[in-house]
Amino acid sequence: QVQLVESGGGLVQAGGSLRLSCATSGRTFSSVSYAMGWFRQAPGKEREFVAAISWSGGNTEYAHSVEGRFTISRDNAKNTMYLQMNSVKPEDTAVYYCVAHRFYSSIRSPADWGQGTQVTVSS
View 1 (tube, rainbow, N blue to C red):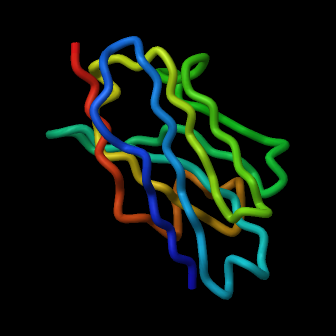
View 2 (cartoon, rainbow, N blue to C red; view 1 turned 45 degrees about the horizontal axis):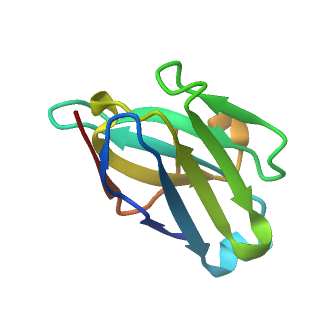
View 3 (spheres, one colour; view 1 turned 45 degrees about the vertical axis):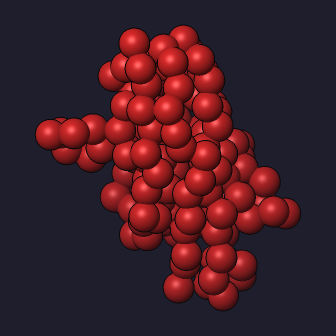
């Protein structure tokens, strides 16, 4: 079983920066390599993929809407994943979810989800 807990959300002005964190725990997570990622859901919209990273960190991918502005990273020694959000826009306003899956190729269909953290970008 995997537990995912997001933090770092809040209110930020357009053009500013924010860093989200996802702390992981669980017996399964500590013994098996997991790919991880971020999804988001804006008001009135469906959840959408944001970014993903493989267990080693050697593979990453981004949604076109955030590429060049957001950076995903992880520190396996700390069991933590990050999303550095730069040059944020009002359309980045959403609840951001940390996700995990045993296989990087399946990260867009996550098996595990966190509770989410709210990010609000003011114009």
